[in-house]
Length: 221
Image (cartoon, rainbow, N blue to C red; front, side, top):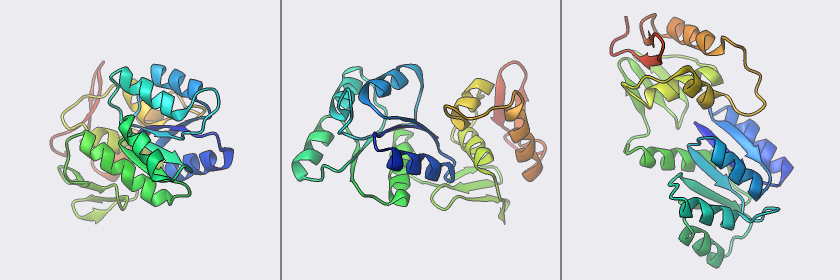
């Protein structure tokens, strides 16, 4: 899951970006409202994490413009403005959730998962495909009932594929899901991660559709 974080506090922003790496989230981080709008115009995100008190353009104005542009991306406001009137204003402007600072990173991750689940029309947090079961709330991956340890990039790649059953995702789409700005990326990185997933599950679990991309196979083989 790729997220846009708009937060002008460098300590908090860096903490969220680094902490969410362990969840398999990719976080692009900007520190003012105009930079947020530039990022939203050029990248696709699963959710927006938005502070209100931003330089150059307020978070509330960014949110209002996002909704005026008919963008239905899930938005969570992260703000030290904890009065009821501020929460009402943010939610009425189009936010899906509002979390007061300071907050627990695990709780924020759970709220993101809940919004993402609902935006994709799913009622259960657990994702399944064939013999694979992945529970994002615990980060547990099982293959035919056996616990399987995945690295953060492998987990992000699996999530992208298992959330889109039957879909063929291009190399570029997968890159966008598992790498953010400033990440060092080798030319064959997607192929390396797919190779590792095949080793941990089975050789036939991910199909290469030549010239198009990759998809999870109906059956591991």
